[in-house]
Length: 90
Image 1 (cartoon, rainbow, N blue to C red):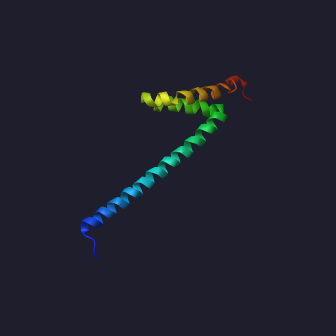
Image 2 (tube, rainbow, N blue to C red):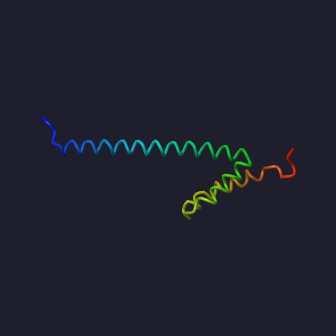
Image 3 (spheres, rainbow, N blue to C red):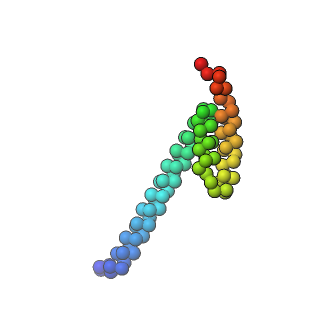
């Protein structure tokens, strides 16, 4: 039996929705991986901690997001404070 055009359209739209969902999940996973690498690296290197904290403070403007990042910003500030003073570099 042949499917009607409406059935074919519905089936194609459902497939497209599934593909879009997979694409979004992949993009989210990629962001999680990159964020994890950036944060862990910044927490080990004071200059990077300072730069990441400054970037987040400048670009994260929604209050709910700022509250979510408060603990991370504290950690980054602590990591940045471990840097040698400007005059102490060789």
